[in-house]
Amino acid sequence: MSEKKTLKVKLVRSPIGTRESHRATIRGLGLRRVNSVSELEDTPAVRGMIDKVAYLVLVL
Image 1 (tube, rainbow, N blue to C red):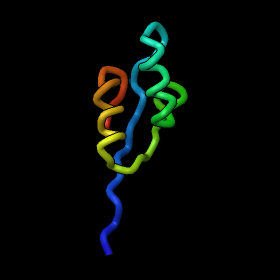
Image 2: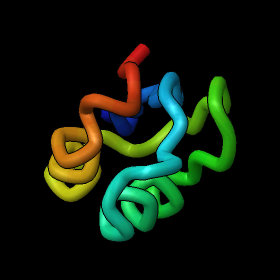
Image 3: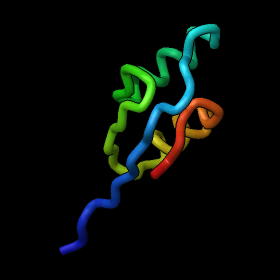
Image 4: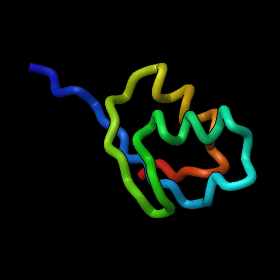
């Protein structure tokens, strides 16, 4: 059986002062504070969210 691929995403910059939609995207990725890490399924929707806030996050 094939295992689902996952991505680990880490918030490395504060979303304070960014656009409201970018802050909402960070919350949608399950990230709360700087250095928090979230493990997400690798889907096109998640990839798009990561691309939108690429200047705030790091993919591990």
